[in-house]
Image (tube, rainbow, N blue to C red; front, side, top):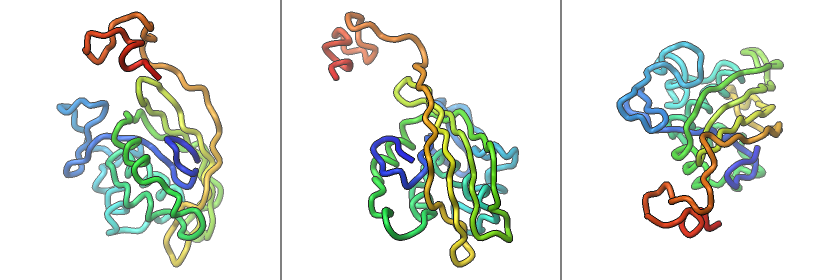
Length: 195
């Protein structure tokens, strides 16, 4: 999977900051959410948190996928990297780009579309999912078919095939001659729109 300059080895979702199992989304620091970001309907402490913290193992490939998503939402970059199969390509993971994407994005939810194998008694599995997020006022849906493998009793992310989607701007487009939204007083084209 690719996004934010990574090599395609890891699923990047996005996030806010975790604080004792509570999450802040969309920069709204007053709005705390205790339910698990993965969308299971369970409390974070009873769902993905023990997997991310290493006090429980993911029982299925889907459980690992949900925990990886929640790790992006909570900024658990170590878990995301460590939940990848070791070997070729693992050193190519761009940690800074992963952290930046996690920190600077706003998540809108995870949807599991399909699973093939990946059960407790399986050694391999596939999870197709979408994760909707907004980054730099651009709403996007990350759609991936991810392969997982059980190695020494632990599920690991092996690889993913990205299904491309159309990116949609959130809000109206800023005109080149309009004042820059950063508040500098300059025209957008002379400030943040220079690229």
